[in-house]
Image 1 (cartoon, helix red, strand yellow):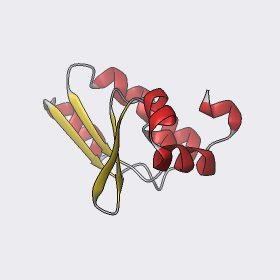
Image 2: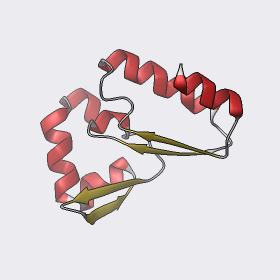
Image 3: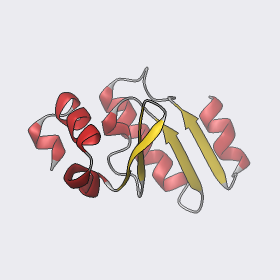
Image 4: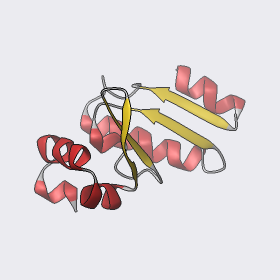
Length: 98
């Protein structure tokens, strides 16, 4: 309900601070797809523990112990950021990684 209210206000920036972590994977994916359509002309900042929540983001910022460990797309970070790659490999199946 809170997300629907926010979308109705049509802000320029959306901030979701670990808002998807309590959702099951399918609901998380459906909500992100719907949000992508509804927020196409806005900036969306998503703070997440679950890597699948951010894998399709335009830019991912990886933090480790309060410092930036990497910045890039999923593909770029898989090649350049050990921390990100380890998180992905621990959370995601081989089919989902591609």
